Length: 177
Length: 128
Image 1 (cartoon, chains in turn orange, red):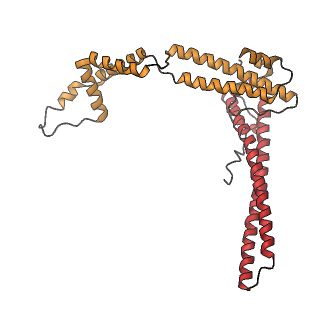
Image 2 (cartoon, rainbow over the protein chains, first blue to last red):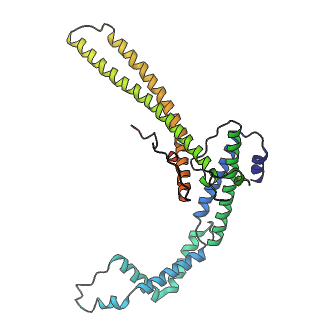
Image 3 (cartoon, rainbow over the protein chains, first blue to last red):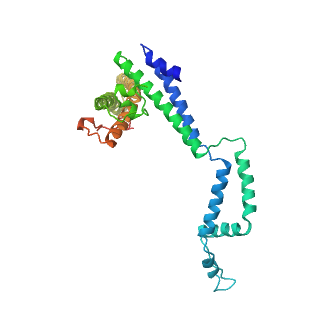
């Protein structure tokens, strides 16, 4: 990319084709950015979050309220639980009884899901996104410099509708690489 | 990268978008005129055909002349539609970018003179 950017700094004549080359790179980087953004967390973090969810179910499930519902009535008129309350209660009960078995099985499922797949920790993802953003910004500035150089030479090149306003509206001196 | 905003450039981008919009609107209006003429001629041709039928007169060439005129206008309309599509292709991205630039400037407290506002909206939606 440095070669591409330096060409834009020194080239006396800028053509629409040159701008197109930078735009293609911006599109590719934007797609890469979206891919990075969609990367899942590592399996260990996924399991940590699953376990935290089970802990939360245990915290939220009110077993004394649950048992209280059965103090009256008959075997033929059982109390009704709503779907969310029922699910939380079920997960809490499972966690009480066999947390290790559940986590072991979930670990196997998560391992299968991640087989051969890429993932990133929050820190890795933030770093990769920052790198992609920095490169997109540099390319956008190179693109804008090229468009302005072409305009100065009397050639009008339309700006992209998704160009960065911060770049498009910057002063010439702020566009320096 | 600083957050300074070049308001002259904002004006330039907004004016360019407005100019392209005006061009698009101009092409669209000429297209509408031709389409109106075609509708009028088609109605006239139908009236001529009914009169000839009522009078039991064989076509004296009027219908042929009207058909030829309608056909010619349809070719003009097709050409105008192409021009309109091309104008729209240029003006829409310029308009959208100008809108985003205006919003960006507004968010950063840049006070915009009224002429910076894009008042007309996108042309493509008219009558379609």
